[in-house]
Image (cartoon, rainbow, N blue to C red; front, top):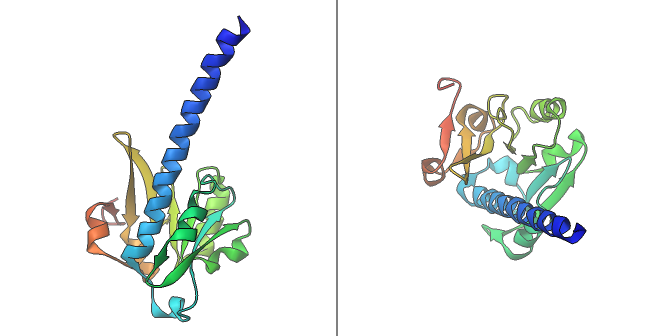
Length: 177
């Protein structure tokens, strides 16, 4: 009798785990592609040997997926480095910072304030991340992972997003909110 109950629960847990892993594999691929379709100001790329840095703040939901991308990909001849960050003092070391939904709202506010007017693309996944000042936000629409850009935040960061990337994104600004 117990086996009959445990097996369905184990299978449900395994299916949920696959869905979550797939979600973050897709988000990791998007983060990599953001590197290829966004131009950073020259002062943030002054050393051609410097890697592009993708930071994950607080808790890492990606597992090894981002590390595998970093091991096998480059952007414009630059390597990619993944950093897990716990302190707001480390945030400026990134080109892209991912803030997962597990980060409490108050810590998200601290991150957004610390990076205001920096050359960092700040990507989140909570429902109101863009409205609170984030550069980009992942969301689910029709069972697909989508993303939106806050053009005001991106412009303050002096980042230039390719029109190809913008054409597949939801674009918001303070004038469209």
